[in-house]
Image (cartoon, rainbow, N blue to C red; front, side):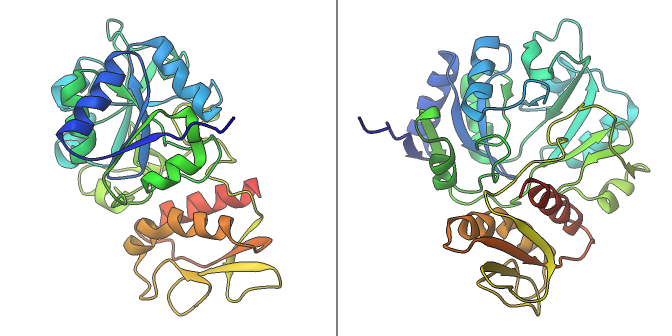
Amino acid sequence: MHAQLPVIRRYGEAAVAEAAGVIRAGGIVALPSETVYGLAADARDSAAVARIYAAKGRPSFNPLIVHVPDLASAEAIAVFDADARAVAARFWPGPLTLVLPLRADAGIASLVTAGLETVAIRVPAHRAFRAVLAASAAPLAAPSANASNGISPTRAEHVAASLGERVPLIVDDGATAAGVESTILARRTILRPGPVTAEMLAQVLPVAAGRTAHVSAPGQLAVHYAPSKPLRMGAVDAREGEWLIGFGDVAGDDTLSAGGDVVEAAARLFDALHRADASAAEAIAVAAVPEVGVGVAINDRLRRAAAGG
């Protein structure tokens, strides 16, 4: 028997209605966001959330981000202080996730928070994700729509290649804009760098980079976002058997940004890793990307990918 392929629908009213119907029935759907494609289910439905974990093969101690349409919806789930309201006012809707105390009456499935007393919450900006939030009238738990520890998907075809029949429906709205997952902020500590940079956050409140001793938010596993081949960072040329992903003056089989633009590099990162992983090369090499702005997030992802190689 042939494996059943997922249904891919182009973004539009019909696709949104179909996705909302699947979610209301307790199913999972893949949706584009401004960061990467996410695998979404009703965050209040523990069985639906379990289907996310099953589809991804995701460790049960790794929490999921809850996506909601606005600040009022977020405040019904999490306890906000003045700092959280300030950054939410500045960066929502957008690629910033806040880790906040979970309200006792939030109604969020415990699988979403991995049993923690905090919840990771975000108001996305992408039209397709927002449309499905509105049509389903549900908070949506949604990690990246790929097999756990695999390369995060920035296109619908990445989702189909990674998850196959494990995801019944993919809403396709083209390539994602940011190309890396959301920044995660817990109080004034950045747990995961992303498109909302430390410099941007510092305009609102003082922040620091850090990592907790236990997994308290998505994306904190040491090995994550990993291709199937060994990966080497800081390359200036390709060694025998390597597929070289260039940046700036370092050319290669592919490039993150010939002009040395870290924002362009972020948007191209996972696309480039998918191409490298699909090539005949035995290993992957990536040119150095400066640790400035969203370059911090790119290097964070590459270090995790290298740890998994």
